[in-house]
Each structure stands twice: as structure tokens, then as C-alpha cells.
Image (cartoon, rainbow, N blue to C red; front, side, top):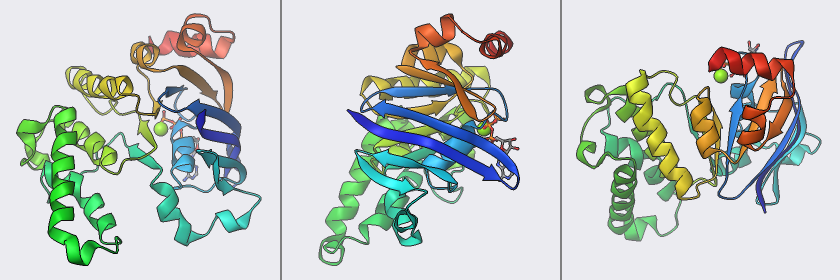
Length: 259
Ligand SMILES: Nc1ncnc2c1ncn2[C@@H]1O[C@H](COP(=O)(O)OP(=O)(O)OP(=O)(O)O)[C@@H](O)[C@H]1O
Ligand SMILES: [Mg+2]
């Protein structure tokens, strides 16, 4: 069953239409790789899914619930956006960690803020905070950072910082974890450890949408690839089909350029 459905997403900036009716759906536990040249609309699509941009047309559903329908203003209220965003986690190209907090502090920060909305927080604070810390330590261990929990971002390599960013997104238990070119700011030797961490998440059936230029990785991890070209999906399907047997000249020349 589809955990995520995006239907006919359009986004304009001024007079320029950057997304021209993008539709796809993704089953729970599967990963979708989004490929396409610079400017094709990958980041804009991820930002629309995460409610950082408001599509001009289209529908976004998670678990069958309509989170956004451009035609229905009651789905656009600001007060709802915070709740809806919790369905998604987003890991950016630049890690955007909080420099004043340790790795562990970066991971516990958002769950701690969210816990304050819990009616039992006042009476049960110590237990709730201990649980959040334990979960955060677990998640940091899953991305191979047990030894680095007490390090500050400036004491970590780029690959380690990106793994903290992944742990931070996971700590909010999103339905769908989105990555925007998670390794493109890293040297090749550091990309490998981040890709390995993401691969382990896919083995645990975490649902993911990943914008990437790493075709080998897409082939290995994704069950579905979409090729965005000029704001529209030009080709889509299983990686062995899309990446091995491109149907359009545009995809052929894109693949030649990145491989
Ligand atoms: N806030 C904005 N205002 C105006 N134009 C924008 C804005 N954000 C993105 N665009 C334009 O939308 C198009 C798609 O940009 P987007 O960042 O989504 O591409 P991308 O596929 O992520 O590219 P890259 O691979 O370089 O990251 C580009 O032409 C970009 O200039
Ligand atoms: Mg981008």
C-alpha cells in the first residue's frame, strides 16, 4: 500500500513553472531515487513534500490522509503545518547541525521540544527525557556514532556530521525520510560511510525519498527511480529499467554525464 502519494504537483516561482505536474507514489518500506540534472526541480519537489514550499496545484497524501490539496484551502492552515511536517524527515546537502550542541544534543533537541506538548510532561519529565536520550543513543549507534555522542559538530568529519543529521531526522520517527543529495558536499571517501548508513536504513525498511547523483547507490537501494527533467518526470520505473535501458535522449545524456 502506498505510504506517500504526490499527484500533479505544480510549483511556480514568479512566472517560471519549476514543477510541471509531478505525480508518483511510494509503498511503505521502499525507497525512491530522484535523479535529474541541476535545476530540474529535485530540491523544489522535496521542499514541497516537506511543506517548506506550497505547491500551486496538486495533492499530497500520506497513509491515505490528504495532507495538502491545493484546491482545498482548509488543508493549508499554518497551525497544521507543524503536525504535517512530522510525517517527513529531511536531510540536507549541508548538514545544518546546531554548533552549540553535541551530537547527542542535536538528536535529542527536537524530540524534547515535542515532548513538552505531551500532557504528562509536567509530572513525568525525568522519565520522558531519559527515554528520549536512550532512543537518541540507540539511533546514533545505528549510524555508527556511539563513540562520538559527546562530540561537537566542529570536532566531527563531514561524514560524521551528516550521519548525526540523519540520526536527528530519524529521532522524530518520520513516516518518510527525505534526502537532498546527502553526499554531494562530501569527499568521496566520506560519502561511502554516509551511503552505507542510508543503505542500512533501507535494509530496515525505512521509507525514503533520495535525490542523488550516485547512480550505483540508486541502483542498489531504490526500488523506484524517477528522472526529473525540466520540472516533469520524463522516465520512471525500477532502477534496472530506468538506469540500464533509458528510453529518451535526455536520460541517456544525463547518465553519460554522471557516470
Ligand atoms: N525560491 C526560488 N525562487 C525562484 N526560483 C527558484 C527558487 N527555488 C528554485 N528555483 C528555480 O527552480 C529550478 C529548480 O531548482 P531546484 O533547486 O529544485 O533544482 P535541483 O534539481 O535541486 O538542482 P541541483 O541539482 O542543482 O540541486 C531552478 O531553475 C531554480 O533556479
Ligand atoms: Mg537541489
